[in-house]
Image (cartoon, rainbow over all chains, first blue to last red; front, side):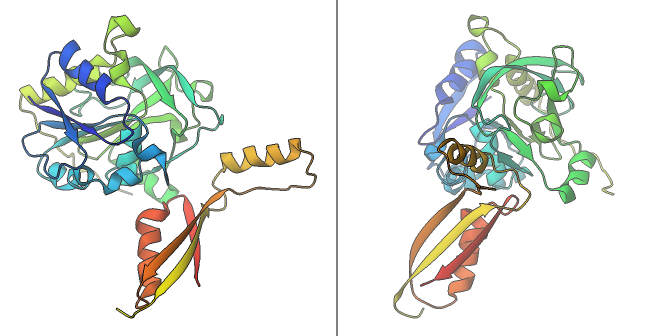
Length: 242
Length: 82
């Protein structure tokens, strides 16, 4: 198993992610400079959090011009797995690898706190060790995490079961009071229809070690490891879009 | 490609109806400074782009806007060529 962590100018969670993957979980990880043109040989690619290119233009927008991000489409077509965390999620949206866009938090604040996530889908490479309804406690740290999707695209999002995580209470209830950024439908994480590409605003790498207050985030990385080592492949369930 | 250098001025703003949190914060700031009657502020970004050649300028600028300068899911753009 070989997990690549892409490093952009302005990434600041690359080392945390590397630490979680390699030192805490004991998987093989490697940094991938954003100018890398090929992602061949990597079982999964992680776009870490941070402020790539200083968030100039829009969060994640300039990162989409990096060769490594431009290599993601063929990489995914070839069976690759991609996890975008926070700024990595924003980059996947800007790159068109996931639907939707990010807006500043409704509160106008940069929110840095633990939140709870309800698992909506457990048949993805990143959630296969979870059950639907499982609640994870993982921190967020963002100013622009209000997920938005155009009305015309909502039916497809639902039909393809692309919402993987929603903000919820400690008991799994999705209410406006526990939505930290005003995301539409309390959406915290979105996947491609097959589940091979996942973006989420919360930081699992910051909840992978008891030392920093929790290990729920490690369940996402251990799901990924289980998926890869057992040789599972994403499968698209046929769905009808109405 | 035709010769010459042209300057394109592009303005990107949020689409009407998309909540503009920075715009609202700026509006509150103006009110706090005592500026009365500020009904709304829409924030945006401004680009001046110097381009070689004049052929197909509109297509080139639209390409830049739709593919990169604006996220057309939530933003709109306008430009002029000087």
